Length: 186
Image (tube, rainbow, N blue to C red; front, side, top):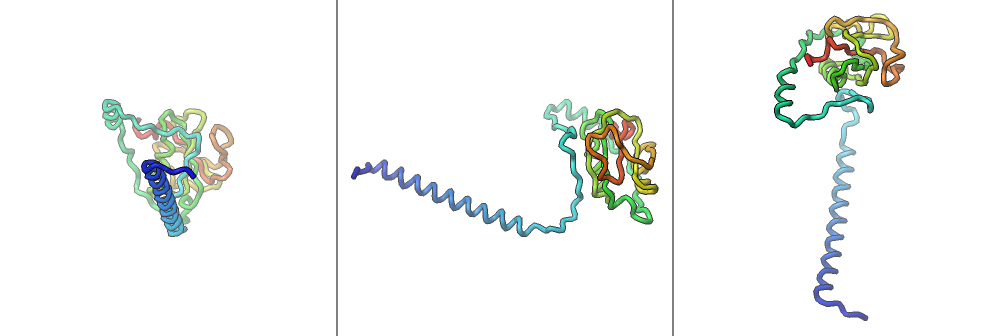
C-alpha cells in the first residue's frame, strides 16, 4: 500500500470537505425553493399581460445625453377618468394590443396602462402596416366601446382582424391597433 504525504493527505481531506459542504448547500437551497413554490398563492390576482416573442422591446440606453433627450421628449398622455360600463363588457375580455408605429415597445406600454384601469387580460404584439389613428375592433357589438376613450381620435369597429397582425387574433375579443396619434409623444 502506498503511503501518502502529509500535503497529499491534507488536500484529499480538504477536497472531501468541500464536496460535502457544497452538497449540503445544494440540498438546503433545493428545500428552500420547494418551500417557496409550495407557499405561492395559486389565486394570484396580478394582471395577465403577456408579450409575444416577436414584439420588439426597448433596450436601456446608458448614454447620458441620449437618456436626457429621451426623458425630456416623453410626456404622459392624459388618461380619462375610467367609468366601468354597466355590463362590465371589456374588463374580463381578452384584449390584443398591436403596435402599428415605429415606436419600440409601445403596445407593451399600452398593456400596462390599461392594466392599471382594470383591463387585465391584455397581450402585446405588432401590426405589419403603419396606422395614423388607433382602431378598436371588437367581435361583438358594444364590447370594447369603453376603450375608445383612452386614445386620441380612435375609431370603433365590429369585426375581426385577419391580416397584418404578427399573431393570430382568433382568441381575442377585442383587438386594438395603436396608431401614431397614440405614440406617447415620441
